[in-house]
Image (tube, rainbow, N blue to C red):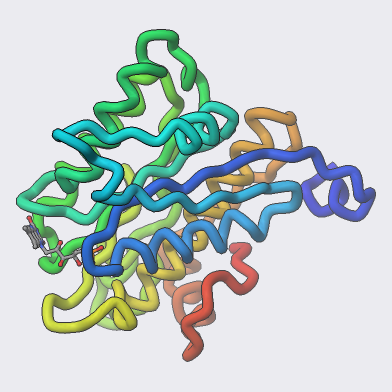
Length: 244
Ligand SMILES: Cc1cc2nc3c(=O)[nH]c(=O)nc-3n(C[C@H](O)[C@H](O)[C@H](O)COP(=O)(O)O)c2cc1C
C-alpha cells in the first residue's frame, strides 16, 4: 500500500509537523511558508507555522509556554533562521536555549528534525547555521532529515530556478539579494526546494510515526535537471504538486 492508497481509503493517520522560524526582514518567513505548504501536501499532515518573535525575548530569555506545548506534541519540527554574522539570529538562539527544558527530560527525543536558513551571499557561511541546528537537534535526541534532492545550478545550463540550486544537503539553504524585499525571497528554485523538503519531512514523519509505506523517490542528476525544467512556474504561491 502506498500513501495514495491510504488516502483513497480515507484512513489517513495524523502526523503533526511544526515549522518554527525567525525572520527579521521576511525572507526566511517566505521560505518557511513554502516549506509548510509542501508539508501540507501530505495526506494526514497537520502543519503549524510558528514565528519566534523578539518581543517574546526578555533579558535574553525566550519564553512562550503555548509554543513549547505545541512543539512537545509535534512529530517533526523544522527550524529556520536567517544567517546573521555566520550564525543563527540572536532571537532564534534565545529560542534554542529555551529548549533546555525539554533537553532535561528528553521530551523531544526521536522526533524528526530539519533546518533551513537564508542569507544574502551565495555562501554567506550558511553551513554553520545548519550545523548549529543539526547539533541542537542531536542534543535533543532528535532524528535529523536532510534535503533529498540532487544539486542544481552546477552545470552550464543551470539557473537560480533549479531545485537545490545551492547544492545543500544538511538542510535547506536559500539566498536572497540584499537589495530586494521579501517579495523576491530566495529564488524560485529555493522556494520549490523548500516545498519538496517540507513534503519529504512530512512523509518521513508518516513513515516514522504511523508506519505508512513511503517509496523513496530516486533520480539521477540528468533526471534532476529535467525535473527543475518541468517545475519552473511563474506564480509564487506556496506548494503546488511536488512529487518527483
Ligand atoms: C546583522 C546582519 C548580519 C548578517 N550576516 C550575514 C552573513 O553572515 N552572511 C550572509 O550571507 N548574509 C548576512 N546578512 C544578510 C541576511 O542574511 C539577509 O538580509 C537575510 O535575507 C535576512 O533574512 P530575513 O529577511 O529573514 O531576516 C546579515 C544581515 C544582517 C542585518
